[in-house]
Amino acid sequence: MTLDRRHFMVAAGALALAGCANGVGGGGGARIDARVDATRDYLMANYPGTRDLMQKASGVLYMPLMTEAGFGFGGAYGRGALRIDDVTVDYYSAASASFGFQIGAQQYAHALFFMTPEALAGFRASPGFAAGADVRYAVPSGGGALGAETTTALAPVIAIVFGQSGLIAGATLEGTKYTRIIP
Image (cartoon, rainbow, N blue to C red):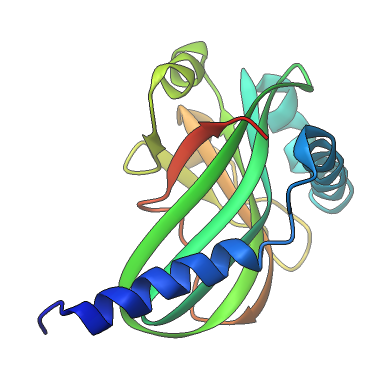
């Protein structure tokens, strides 16, 4: 399949719609912080294993609401905050684009736990961080337990994807670019 102007416009439109439908709006840092607080509280209340991760992590990037849409080409967008010792130090946007057999839309939240000072420093120093091979995924199960035990305990970055709603197959952070923003 060749990428022509029509397909490019569909992909660009999907990404733009994902950003517009995000719901974070232009309320600035206070609005993002309120959503991050709610996300943190939700994680602690519903997945008690995250308390231990939060205490051990050098920093946590919370993305309270990611909106994803796709029809062949797809995109996702959201905004969040990086917290160190539960204090916001920076704001970030996350964007991704995808191509493949996909149709639908969904919303979800995720958190990146930086388990080493080096992983956190690398994230903060980079002009744009793309989640990839160094990230281990912990998926909350229906019973409220968190699958972040043996294989993820030694990972420099642990990602937790939760709160999915909508009709699209899967939620992945692979290829997501995080960029520091000024809200």
